[in-house]
Amino acid sequence: MNDGALATVAQVYPVLLLALMWDSRFLRDLRQQSRRPRREDPVHGVLFWTKKRVRIYSLVVASLLIGDTGLAVLELNDQVRRGWVTTALLLAGLALALGTLLTRIVVDVFDATQEDVLDAPHERAVPGALDAGGIQSCGRRWLPAPPDEKQAGNPVRDPPRDA
Image (cartoon, helix red, strand yellow):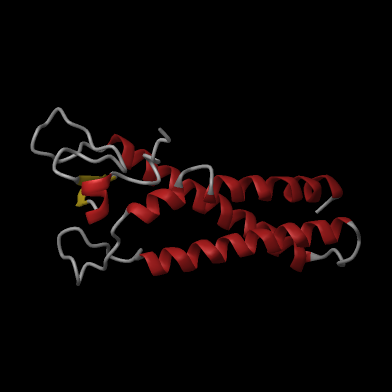
């Protein structure tokens, strides 16, 4: 890789990391989802991507992107010898980041455009919203809200007002 490509990689990886982790509300949406395995919840369970697996995969991707950013900076400063191994590592990290980002975009688009299955066909589920019965929506399905949110409201979303 030449200096221009390395400098681009060193600048683009942090932006990809931000897009993958924070900018897309990924962590907030993940916190609200119930991702129990299909054997525990045959109706709403997930086949593979339980919270533990999502946690491991997300941390591995973030660690690899940060490591590749450091490798690109070290290679730019001639601290690491340029060769096919470093180029392969940088390109593999780029492929992993872009593949993960594309997958997340596809999943988010399908989730946003999917018709919700509710009693009233004109209602739409809004992630994190509470309905009159204290049921909290979570993307594709409705989940019961935690007991404290049914009575006192959500302290994060509805902070107490000073009188």
